[in-house]
Length: 170
Image (tube, one colour):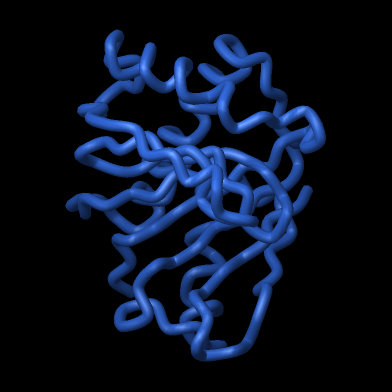
């Protein structure tokens, strides 16, 4: 399995308190301070005008961070753009670490809290990670290892036109 384009979303614990415009100065501060380890933070894009859209996006060379509003469930979404030469499990751990680093910063800088027992993992590569039973079966143990085997993993949709999306709950 060759899985490089991977995203993870941690859900907001208090979705009603999310005001997208509050994150613009926070992300600007992160760019000025280069606050995310091993990321070159570059720019911010405001998609707050889009209903259930990507919200506020912090663009980095290695990946994008966003206060994502998809499916009416606000949270921090991190999408890794740059492939690594790591094993699949180590790659997943790297993506999770980057997202968790950003969550910790948001907890400190924006007083945003996250649900510790629920997250989405999205394979954004329909060629190398099609949304089918075989890919889910191959990816499930890799994800379980990266999460520490404490999460129940459920495939969100069997539609091959959708990206492989896995809900992890503990």
